[in-house]
Picture 1 (tube, rainbow, N blue to C red):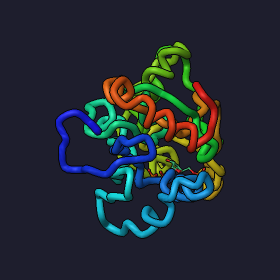
Picture 2: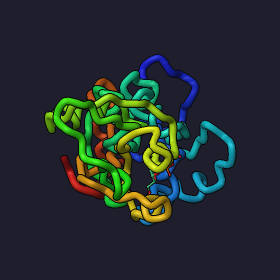
Picture 3: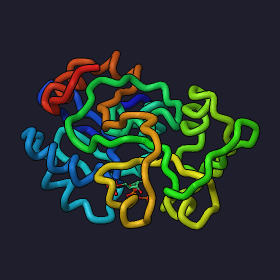
Amino acid sequence: MAAGEGAYSGAGPTGVALTLALPKGRLFEPLVAHAEACGLGLGGVLAEAGRRLVVEAGWVRLLLLKDADVPVYVEQGVADAGVVGLDQVLERGADVLRLKRLPFGHCRLCLISRPDAARRDGGTPLVLASKYPRLAAQLARQRSLLVEVIPLAGSVELAARLKLADAVVDLVETGRTLRENGLAPVEEWLRVAPYLVANRAAFHLHGAAIRALAQKLGGARV
Ligand code: PRP
């Protein structure tokens, strides 16, 4: 149970009730399917959550959040653990424990542009649009690229297509969004997968319960 929260009194197989932060975005459906396949008994309750933001499911309390908010709830200890993409953890710069890389929803964070985009000479900043302004700037710096970043909230491919920006930095999963908008990945900048993450203090207090959850969820230890 997260420090400072006293409302939930359920107890799991290890006798501990956990609060988990889960993403409602693109990872939600594969997460529901994965949780069901792992026999966690959460698939049904998640599938029927509707508009509820908190779902109590026996041994866990589930917080259904915007993807970007999952690292915040876990870092602050409102949730003991959570499932979130590496993209969101790095964008937030969240101090959370990464326990497992989960075996679904893998994709790539790419530099994307129009096929006809002109190459920049060294002195002019490349204008990048991204939902990940901090991460895009950091990855560009690592590549010694001079950039100016325009933060956007979504549908960023449009920014490249309509020349709001020279290029965008965004996730590519199936590649369908790029194909249907006449864009192409120029470079892969980061492999992205969902992780089981934990709050440091909660892992210290409830390590057995969180490790039991990690074992049930499968995936690769990191
Ligand atoms: C993500 C990402 C791309 C798309 C890539 O967007 O930002 O737009 O998925 O997936 P694909 O390669 O399988 O087409 P998301 O669905 O999270 O929506 P958003 O653009 O509104 O943020």
